[in-house]
Image (cartoon, rainbow, N blue to C red; front, side, top):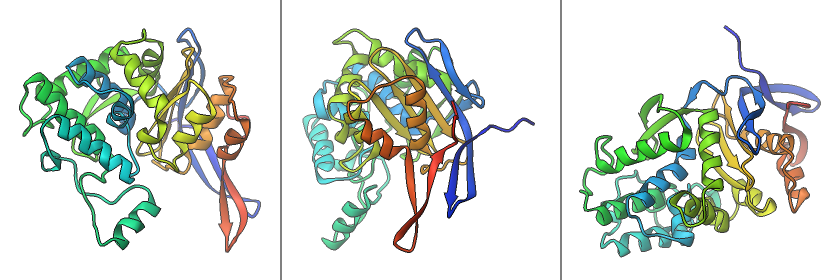
Length: 320
């Protein structure tokens, strides 16, 4: 069996101690594949990179959200206070409370926020869970469409049927597998190339369409799709017009305003390997940031020995 190529090296004290394999694909403005590594035609679970597609399904089904609230509906937030307030606003507008959420109780993704929550004497909660914006929006969609809310996570529920249809429509391929995501919602498997096509469809859609509304909201409010200290926010602010969404188990998906798009999947699920490859792929596609220093910084992850930097996590040289 042919293995996927090494995408990332972990160097410590001049010695490569670990390697991460995976697949990647980059699409040109016309949608043709111009960069690839590994097997981007094979199915993957995009995990939270599915969320923008699911948000499109919700808007198509009657969800009336804009701005930061639509951004958090398509995002994986860090559990900061403004994220919690945003999810609560979505629920309140639909006449619901956090009791209706079916995502699990979790600590905030942001470690500093989690520590602050613990110091205040609070614990895990559904609202702090990174998918609460999506779940709140799913419930609001059900209210708008007149669908039941108690079973909104059932794969046969009209909401989830609409989500699958939107995913297949945007990706231009049939769902390869259906699973259960970490938040309990149905998860749709696609090829990496299909995910790239879907993100490309979002940014190229006509203004005012559900697809473009989702893309525009995410790009305008990147801290709401991720968090104030997250890499996705920094990338979108550094590269005007860039849409980026990560997914668990080493997935990143992005599209640029002119239709260039890409997806990476790290085989072993390592999240530390994700952003260096994404930066390498952005550069291979010729994306020019407004702030090149941000891409330079995100291209590597420093490794420490004691309090000193003794190495880095980086994409393999000349990867693309």
